[in-house]
Image (cartoon, rainbow, N blue to C red; front, side, top):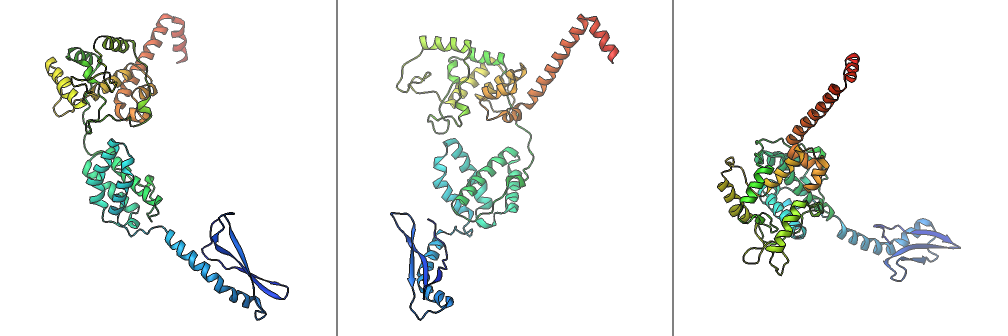
Length: 370
């Protein structure tokens, strides 16, 4: 039962004597309620005002204990600096994050949050401070997406601080203006179906392209979301190659991996790219733009592009690529979607034109209507 921070009690006349009543501070463990105590004053108390005055010493003890307890439960003030909250958040919350996400948060804290906001008091983190921080990060990174990710880390820290009782202004994300991209988008290299097939067929061990080990920790990691772990239909071609691999090349191992190296360990993705993909591309003489990152994702980009260009609905591509939603797919492949729309429009126009040519009556009706 909640306690009142300040209790005034109640007095009333019972017969010829004034009586005062109030609830005790301690809770009865059997009932879970605070017991009510009644005090009958002597004949010297002859009025309501006198009865209230006589009750004050009893209430004083209650109110003193209630005030002390309330003071202990008061939210921590915002005089603490952000750097202190960041350290607390890092020790309490960050260990619960997946390693990849935790590594990104640590980078945001080290490069932006502590240097730009670390010495600011929590109560001073108003909308103005948020906007100044976002603008500063945007000027340094030149990327809107990077700025949004850094700001998301800051908001996560501040939200935890509010839940812990710190006095932190609640700033709405809608009130923050994010910068436009100042740097040109990095060119995305992708392999079309023919190029990917050439690379896989030319590689000495094409199965190396599959990797399940985090490149930074060298440890097996779980998918970053439920959608990333969702199953996708297996094509007949993939089933054929996997069955052939299991029958002819699979080596049983303690961890149950399908593909292992000579040491019985799973392949590392960076080594696969360095000694598998890069060497094969060089052998085949495939030209790659200077400064463009070349890795496993080039195959992924190629698959997405082929699906979109073949007219696959955007929501199907989103599910197959394990994107969080269609917005992610559109953000990365909007130019492909635009080309696919033109192709679809041309295909429809060709079909309508063929129908008009095959049926002269339809063409004459269309001419008259025009």
